[in-house]
Length: 636
Image (cartoon, one colour):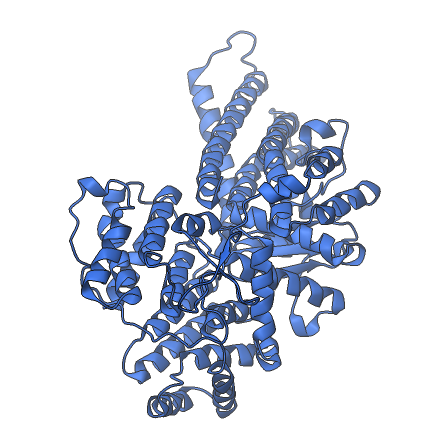
């Protein structure tokens, strides 16, 4: 399965989860009803009392709904809530030790290689076991938690395998399912908590004719049934996803020894957590976070370690070679532009199908490219992205016009009116360095600043975005790069600015997003081509990749659009189902790759569109270092 199929499978798993949850509620209602018959002394004289059954069902469902709603509301901030409940602290680069910096470097490389926003990293300092987790609603708001024991006991290759495993959960849609599971099961736990409250009344002797303490004891027992069902649900949902994540980690790194080494260490060492919240989040971890009971095999959220090792050990060289690797056939591009990875002098003939298959994927070539990109960054930028004021200055510097001194002077004059002098000075320094970089480094540089920018409040993130917008307005016109910068930066900071609005699926038919798809393809065709007939041909090549294109009214030439129109259409496409997003990305790739050439402008716009649709594309379509920068085109 590719990225889109995994996302669709995650949606189906969510529906199955709701079905299992409903079945558990039904069992609990029946059990509470039977207990109520004895409490109110109706049994065995009468076993069916419709009024009592409806009352029990209503109260039970309301109680569970309240418990689940409360927990879901608490989780609205995303994965950071889980990390903090487990005792994690945000790993800040300037305060991290050598082991922490190595972890941050691995996460950065994996994020750049996969095309997602660099996740915030939380260190579970008090946990000596080997374990890790990923949490969040989408790849754009993911966080990763790692125990101190993992940093102390694992080699870099082994730690990379663990992070690769967690990135698989991020890319395959498992995180949102896991958070919903925590929220739903908390409602069942609420029944147990209500029973515990009634049971505690026995100490005060407040029976008053009704044995409420006995009813509470019964509710605790019924809540135990709910917990039993909940653990079975977690085990059923989690186990197969763990096998998939193990295989994906090996595919990402092409290093089965790293993953095998971690699992072998888990056989000899401990993966359990001491944090009280480990029970609720046990299905999210790399290894078993709880002590296995007598029913361990039934309740275990993870497959046995021996089976995980056996499956990874069964992968031989031919298996690894058969794994999908995006860059296999190297050819030289006649115009000196690479459609593959920087370095080595080789280029890769990329097909649109490979673009789609690489969405949400990671491969060793992606790692090599990510490392090459990061190595090109000056030390001042590498350090700057990790410090708050410098990260702001880098974001402002990316919005400056380096080619027109008069325009840049106007932008700086505006910036001096709204920002302190030292920040303006840093912005100028970083602008000078960024202007010397290859254009392919700009979007990765944006992503590197995101973890630091997200450490501020929602208001400060909004102020940053408004300041970038002000710099662009001071320029006098909106170039394609500045549109891309705003699109990506706004999207990356959205979890900080508006964390309570995870994207939902609203459109499941191409008819609902046809006009938006046409507009996006029109913009891409105009960016990549210069002659009217070439623009029209590229546009039609993309349109006829959309499902049902023969039954739709399709213009012969691209439609006129503004950047504002383009932004509105992209926002609507975000609400499409995974399968529709796949069709749109495929059509975009056919539009861009029609002439087997990818300019810097095409690469930036295609990646920005895909990233905004939460379809992360690794940065493999950019021009090779040392080649001239392509001129920015307009979307009009």
